[in-house]
Image (cartoon, rainbow, N blue to C red):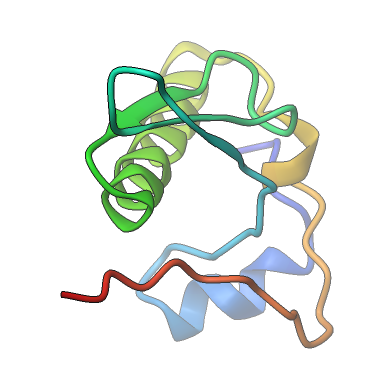
Length: 98
């Protein structure tokens, strides 16, 4: 897999052949209810869900599928999925409250 960074080898070994990258999502509420997520980091990513948490989960799965498709077809991965940073990340995570 030529698109994976050299620094990913350490992460791959730790996570059973896979590694993690962080992408930015833009999530906005829809007038009819629910939320829509897109990402400038992963072109083609458009996810819709009932809650922000569900939308985020769907977007994560879709980003993974886009990466798998790129690798399967020999297409380059989006840069955000290649350029791993080995520093601590601060993430905003949606939490559904009943």
